[in-house]
Structures are given as structure tokens and as C-alpha cells.
Amino acid sequence: MDTWKISGGESLFGSVRIPSAKNSVLPLMAASLLCSGTVTLTDVPNLSDVMASRRILQSLGCKVRWKGRTLSITPGQQIGSTVPEEYMRAMRSSVFYLAPLLVRTGKALIYTPGGCRLGARPIDLHLKGLADMGAEIRQSGNALEVTAPTGLHGAQISLRFPSVGATETLLMAAVCARGETILRGVAIEPEVIDLIRFLQSAGACITGAGSRTLHIMGRDFLSGTQFRPCPDRITAATVLCAVAGCGGEALLTNTCNDDLLPIVRVLRRAGCSIAACGPHSLAISSCGRVGGVENLFTDVHPAFPTDAAPLVGAAMLRAQGETAITDTIFENRFSCAEGFSALGASVSVSGRTLYVHGVPALRAARICAPDLRGGAALVIAALQAEGESYLTGIDHIARGYEDLTSLLGKLGARIVSTHWMDE
Ligand code: EPZ
Image (tube, rainbow, N blue to C red; front, side, top):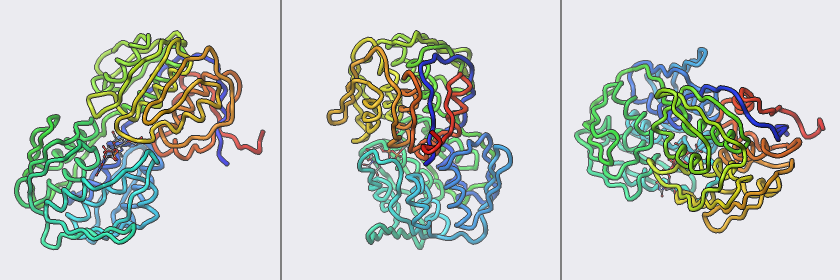
């Protein structure tokens, strides 16, 4: 079983460059199907979810080339309509193929998407919006057949919740639908804005980016384009929380500081010193035992993001004071609490709230990553624990972090791949 040995108890010092955002790259890869020419994405991180998307595109008949960190996608003349079930199950982002396939082939055969087990993750908003644009939907067990034999038409759609994924699906559908679509109540997460910028660079007519209402005038096809996805704010949050919890000083480059403000504010409240060094770089310093942050609630952007909730929880395990973090987005965000406890933390979960009573020290343990961000949170926790911890379940982490061991290794963190049997 692949395992990381994490030698904790040291402060972190150094400089790291933040890679591009997984949650931007994945919808952009799917949106490439809408383009008639080659799409070139630069500075793409090598993640297992990116590899899974690459396999989906290839299975649909696209030519996909990796060169260095550049990904070129050329949709073939003949595009398939089915995403195989094993690919759909591999990740939640497989749902992004629904709209482009519908636009491109008039039909999409997909299966219920997989992904982190954070609670119920329905796709009703995606489907309802597509139905408003003329799609017909048939579901049989896990299989979904969505058809639009005469194409999609513009519509006025109001989302009851500003879902990131549903906003992205409906944007991809609307840019090539007949006539105008007005999307109300949309998500404004930085990765949604990135998708809008990408689509615009390929010729799409979208106005209102950054507001809750988007006006989209559909056109027959989009052109090829070259695009560099935005920096990953959650990877940046991971580094910031690791330094906050372990103590030390770090410089983060290739950041989008405005997008990080909700996280920076919380860590400052806990006593970290964080300063911008220009618009794309941040310096953090922490004494190690920060103060607790009571009554922190996650919410949609521009509020504190759900993906950073377990990371901040991990940074607070040795805080002098109490922390309570409530995730309003997902039901089961804090599965990592079991691992925190194994490391000697004083934590409990009630409903959607993680309670942390800071303790002076953590101890090494054998722990298992329950999901992507919960896994990263356990790495942060183990780095604060004296001794050698062993973390399994690292496949979850590889889905969203290019190489977390070497990223944190640049700050002096000692994390090596090993095997249970080696020890
Ligand atoms: C995106 O997921 C991200 N994933 C998630 O990041 C992130 O946690 C989430 O947005 C919230 O910011 C990608 O971008 C690939 P949502 P998504 O649709 O699109 C409910 C990570 O760790 N909902 O905004 O699935 C849903 O149940 C991942 O990188 C419906 O009810 O999030 C949830 O409670 C994990 N019906 C809420 O909305 C729908 O049709 C937010 O979901 C869709 C969503």
C-alpha cells in the first residue's frame, strides 16, 4: 500500500511556486470539445484527475498531447457521445462532459459521477438548466441519456443555489445554443471566471463576468485558443495553513492574492502575519502556536471556501484557544477528524461543525486520508506531530495536488513515499 512517512515537529521555511488550479483546468479540458481548432493550455499541473480527463477526451476521439506542462487538445471530426462508466466514476468532474457532448453530438450518454464523498452531490441543477434549454433527459439506474437532436436553445435560467459545477455546465451549453441565455444566481468562484475568460478567448459572447447574472449570446462554434489557467487558491491555502500550524516563514509566488483574501483574513485572525509582495506573491510568518478561530463558517465565494475548511482545522490543532468551523456547503466535510484524533488532537464533529480545542503537542500516528482536502489536512497535522507518522489513502491527495511531498519539501517538510511493509 502506498504510504507517506511524515517526519513532523519542525517549522517550515522557504519559497514555493503555486501551480495552476485543478478546478479550473478540468472544466477547461471539457470545454475544449466546443472548439473547432486546437486548444492549448499552458502551465497545466500533472494530477491524476487531469490524467483521467485526458483519458476521457481520448476515448471520445480527441488528440491530446502533453509537452512539458503544455496540454494541446484537438477535437477529432468524429466525437463519441459516451463517457465510459469507469471514467465517470473516477471523478466528479466527468460531469463537465455532459454539456459539450450535447452541443457537439446532440447526445450525451454518461453515468452518475464519482468524486470525494463529501455528502450528497446531486446534479439536478445541471439537468434542470439543460432541460430548460431543450434537452431531453432519461435516467435508468446510474445511466443518464441526455439528448438534444435539434440542438439547444437559449433560455432564462435561475439557479436556486450558486453551484460552481452547474454554472459551468450551463455556460458551456449556452455559448453554442441558439439565441440568448440569461443565467441568474450563478457562482462567481475564480475558477468560474477563468472558464468565462477561456470561452471568451475562443470567441464566446458572454457579459456580466463576476456578477450573479450572465448574458450569453450563443454562436455556432468556438475557435481554438491558447490559455493559462489561474493559480490554485486551495493549494496556496494548503501551504499557508501548513506554515500557520507548524510555524515558520514562507514566500508563495504565482498566487492570486485577491482570491486568497477570505483565507488570509482567517489566518490573520489566528495571529499569523501575512503580507502581499506584489499582486502575485504572499509572505507568511507564524510562531507555530496560533490563536483559535471561533465561529468560522464556509460559504460560496467570496466567503471562506469549503475546500479550505479542513486545512484551517488542521492549522488550529495546537492553537491556544478554541476553534469551531461549520461547513455550510457539504454535509460530510470533516472526515479527517478521526485522523486528527489519532494524532492526539482534541476534536469533535457535530453535524457540519468541527470543534477544536487546541492542545500543546501532537504525537505521530498511523492515519488514512479520507478524501482530497481531508488528506492534505492530515499531512498538515502530521507535520506538527513529533515523530514519524504514516499516511495511507494518498491516491485521494494525488487527485488534486501535483506533488504535495515536494511542494512542502521546498519548505523543509520531510515527507517520503514508503510502504507499510518497509517499516
Ligand atoms: C466544485 O464542486 C469543486 N469541484 C469542489 O472542489 C468545491 O468544493 C465546490 O465546487 C464548492 O466550491 C470542482 O470544481 C471540480 P457545487 P461542485 O456544485 O461543482 C449542491 C475539491 O476539493 N448542488 O458548487 O460539485 C451540492 O450538493 C473539490 O477540489 C445541488 O444541490 O460544487 C453542494 O451541497 C471538492 N445540485 C453544493 O450545491 C446540483 O446540481 C455545492 O456544490 C449541484 C450542486
